[in-house]
Length: 305
Image: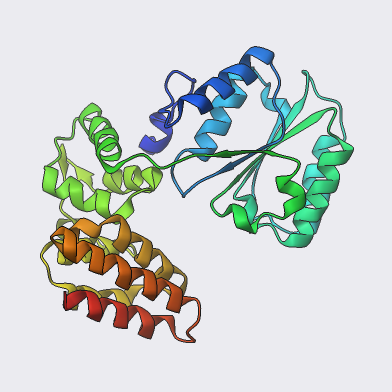
């Protein structure tokens, strides 16, 4: 029997279990639950911060029957036909309870035409269906959907709380984490808590959290190795590793990672200089033909601090 995924085992199920970053947001969700009704909602925030978890907590607290819930991952089903077929067919029948809920994860993957089709479905079935959308990039959602949804941005937790949550899960699973090793996994995945939990589960063995170089290699290991090199101050080797390993679509994430871990560049003056270099590198990233060369140049500048 396969092991239960820790990310599901420890996913909050109730409003009390959920880790709130905003008291105002907690009160808003409590009001929806008390009223037993919700508007169309657009949850936004970085990957792994709890958007889908919040949506499922809300559905659970409202007591929506499973037959009245449709979950769609728009990163896989994002065409106009997907919207017209699956969403329209589900929404067009009467609910068992007060209303149906369509939970569309990663709605920012929907094409503009598919989003326009979704807007039409939302308007046609607004009396019997509620739509909960999640997205990493709200700027990729068309204005017509924004205007029909209540925006709800979920902020990332700070690194201390992030680390504490992962440590709690490890200890609950009988794993005693070495703090430096745990720090490497945190730095490689922050603010994506889901990713971090999955990674430490894969690298836990016999009550021990393995160091990245002790575990079986996988395609994401370059990020862990990158963290180790940055922590050792070897930015030159880190640059060569990143440029050789990162896919084009991952390179933009590296700039964000550099900024989130700005303390690796030493004192406050160096951190300020590094921030300016990272910012310029990210600006240039959107303009250059070859993002690898731009990233390499940015890392060379950082190595000279």
